[in-house]
Length: 119
Image (cartoon, rainbow, N blue to C red):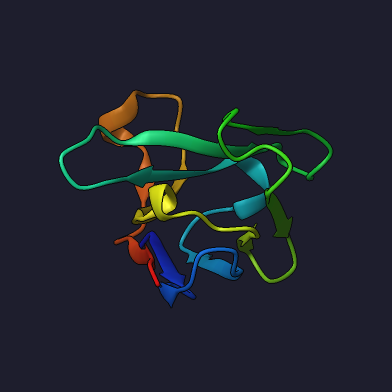
C-alpha cells in the first residue's frame, strides 16, 4: 500500500523557518522524482519544488527560490522541504507528491500538512 506521510507543519512567525518531511512507503522511492505542492485557501494547488530521482536536479517556484530547499534521502525513503524566511503568503497546506506519469489524478499524494505564517 502506497503511503506518503507529511510532518513538520505548524504555526510560525514571519521570518521563521520550518522543515517538512514526507516519509514514504509502498513504492520504490528512488524510481520517482518527488515534488512539493501547496494549496492556499481559495486558491489552486501549485507546484513549489521538484527534485530528481537521486537529488542532482532541483527546481523551485520563483516565489520560493533562494528561501526553500528540497532534498531527499533514498535510504530513508523521505523527501524534505526546508523553508526559511517564511512569509504570510506562504500559508497553505503543503503536500508531497510522487508523479506516476499516468496523469495528475493517478499520482501518489500525501494527506498534507498545514503551514501558517502569522505573528
